[in-house]
Image (cartoon, rainbow, N blue to C red):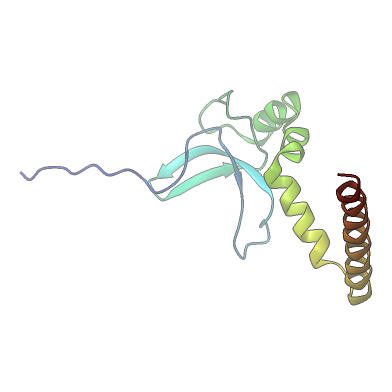
Length: 127
């Protein structure tokens, strides 16, 4: 027989209990889920709710079990505090802006820059 070659998966931290963000063209894109079972090396089975990475549910846990873990560990609030979630919210807010809203944002940024430069000029004048 030949030798078996073992290579690492290109997935990052795929294991039971990990929280994942669903992406792609599916109707569930943008939602969080938890991996509750790994069917094979290419297909994890995700539950309908998400879990913390520290606690592991029983393998193949069903929705009510996953939901209890999820509510107990307040995953929604923890997710909202992450930089990744904040960045996604910011991108969505910017995409929803109208042309006039973008104009107002531009004017506010110009005002802020003007004030910063004015204060900096005062400091330089004193020095």
